[in-house]
Image 1 (cartoon, rainbow, N blue to C red):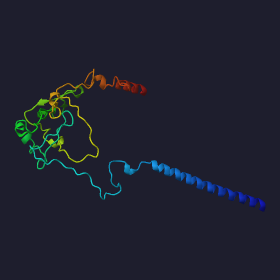
Image 2: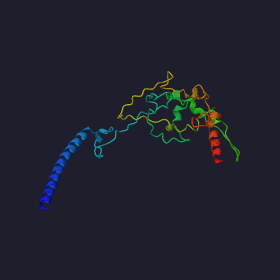
Image 3: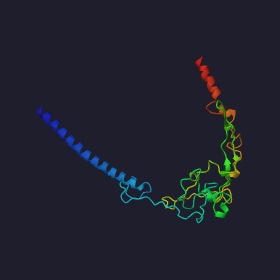
Image 4: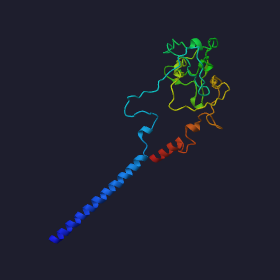
Length: 246
């Protein structure tokens, strides 16, 4: 029994030594593999546009935003970003804001009747349109004056600035002169010869909406019923549901 115990103990010791050495070798191989993988890993610092330490704000500051300081009437116009885009404000707006319905300094120069003399961009004809339909409500029944399903619109010319357009800074904003982290390479494709400086939106506002090329440009009863839907029509679905109850 003593001999067997000694043999057993010797085998166990040898096994432990073998496993221990093998484990150490495997760990080293694993460590080498990890190091090799780490070298190929993309670091956090390489992601994004920031070139300073990601883990502290010390010594890090954003690019300074600088708006144009030229006074109204002495600045150069900014080319529109695309056809009929709201033009950017090329001059200082200090003292102009906030714009309210009763206090709008912008129209002092940009009103169509004075803009040419002021050298300013005149308010376009689209700002003198009322595009809000007047629906009917007698206190009990509400009825719409237009049918949205047929792409009907209500567009009327008015002789004053639309109350929906008085807040100029809702669409028009000053242009910052700060350096871009990523340069904008977009190039506008103007459909009008003077599209970079003039709006032509009012010329097409009355055009019919061709939302379905070669088909009906409005919602039809078949559309409402999902008649041509791959999922099946609403009536068919209702009929199927009704049949299932019996």
